[in-house]
Length: 381
Image (cartoon, rainbow, N blue to C red):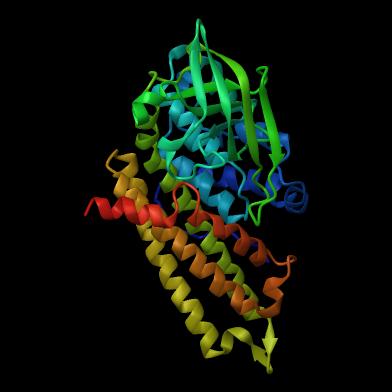
């Protein structure tokens, strides 16, 4: 059975045409190679250049830097189609996070160096925040960057870095003045071919195998002083400013992945027989699916509201946290209920629902745990 994402109409022909292009690339490059990608734990490099040629990468980058200058709705289309297809590769990190930091805070020289190659897929970007002993508390990071003439000497380690194995450059969160606390944090653009930069383990995760995740090590890496992103000491402020878009991206992926889990369950129950009739014809099955359909209907309405708010520059940090919290929790509930309707088959890796179940779990952890989201929301009450 062919599965196609059916979401509420957005009444925009340009978006529809863009979605058709994205869907074609996703089908040809990701769905057709799903087994190999899941086994290898990384997406083939060719995907990035094909996606770049199709306009899928960094659609919001201004035209003068090689992009199309589109609004975030086009990023959302990529997120929806990729997540619905069951792929978790790090295009969101590349397009929605790293590119946006460069657009907002990069110098013209930095933009000219990185953005065109990000748009084309020639270079892959990553961002390194988390450290082995530091999760959501970014103020506690230990990675340091000490000024030495025309460069910073970077030392430290990072872990759980999406795109870590494939990245060509990384935005590294480091302390340039530890005595100032959060005001001593800066962002550095670190090319992965610099001496002293090392990739550690390609981390073995429960799910999201299509997204490569790695440890990174920095041993006396000499980073040119003009590779500081924005102003020195403003890193924490920049991170907080960009969090709403990051969390909205996670919410969109969660919504689309939950939709796929529901669609898989709906199709399976209509096809599989038990006691002489389709599983779908049992009242419990229909009631479970009805509850899921209701959650998804509410979810799509909220996603469109949040995207519209973000495009208008009005989405607050608390609203983004609420979106991330609600949609990822809903994803967990729907995916679990969907797998239950598969019975024993749902526990078999040959069915996509098993992958969707594994992949869903981390969405309540990264980009801020559900507990941190509640804390963010609660502080604003």
